[in-house]
Length: 171
Image (cartoon, rainbow, N blue to C red; front, top):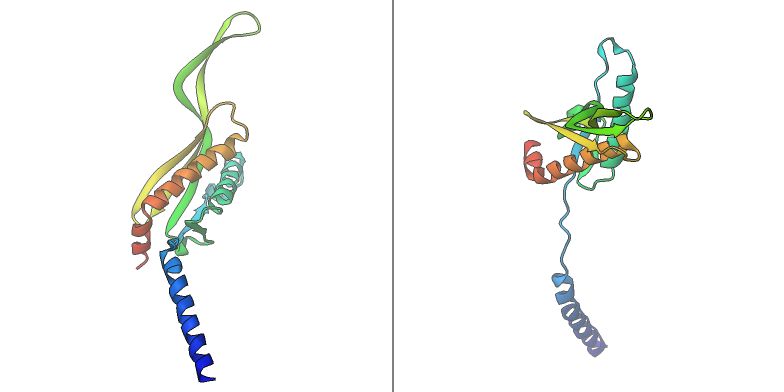
C-alpha cells in the first residue's frame, strides 16, 4: 500500500515536471485594462431638435457602435465615470481646396469645389483636449458611417498611445 502511494507520488511529480516547462513557456496575453469612454453631443440652445442635432445624434450612434467593439475601450453612461469624453461637434461637407471641372448637359463647362464628408469630434481627457476629424471621400457608400469609423479608429489609436497615462490619471 505504501509502495503504491509512493509510486503515485513519483508519477505525479514526473507529470508536473513534464508539463511545467510547456505551461511556463506559453506566452501569456497581457490583459489591458479598458479605458472608460463617454460619447455625447450637446443639445441645441433651448433644447430644440433640428436637422443638425439629428445628424450629430446619428454620428453618436455610429461612434458608439464602432468604439463599443474595441477591446481597449469600455463605454460608460456618464461623463463623471469616464477617462475620456467624446463630444460630436458636427458633421458636414468640407471643401478640400481643389476643384473639378466637367461638361454639363448643355455642353458648357462647370467647375465645382471638391468636398469630403467630415465628422468632427472633440476629445477631452482631464485638462487635455483635441479635435479628431473623420472623413469619407466622395462616392463612399454609407458616407457618414464611414467618416465616423475613421474618427473611431483615430480615437482608438490615441487611446492606445495614451493608455498608461489615462490609467494613471484615475488615481
